[in-house]
Length: 69
Image (cartoon, rainbow, N blue to C red; front, top):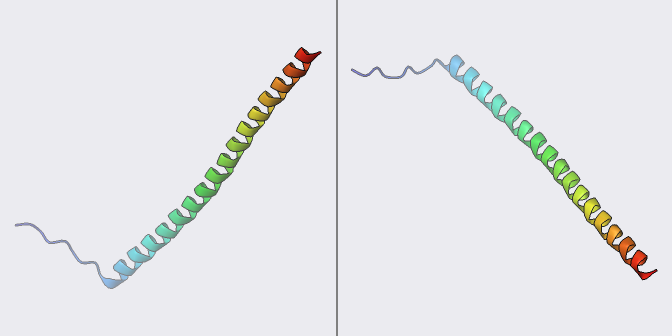
């Protein structure tokens, strides 16, 4: 015969629910922190790409001005 799961007493159930709620909120906070970090890193990557493009354009401009002389 299969043993039925035991129903915890109300105090144990309430403590377990409180722990689960706290864990959920901690995970939500961590997720928000990770999202903010991801956004900062995305911005930094975008800025670096922009700098590389600007440097490439500046080099091309310098080469054109040297050729014209």
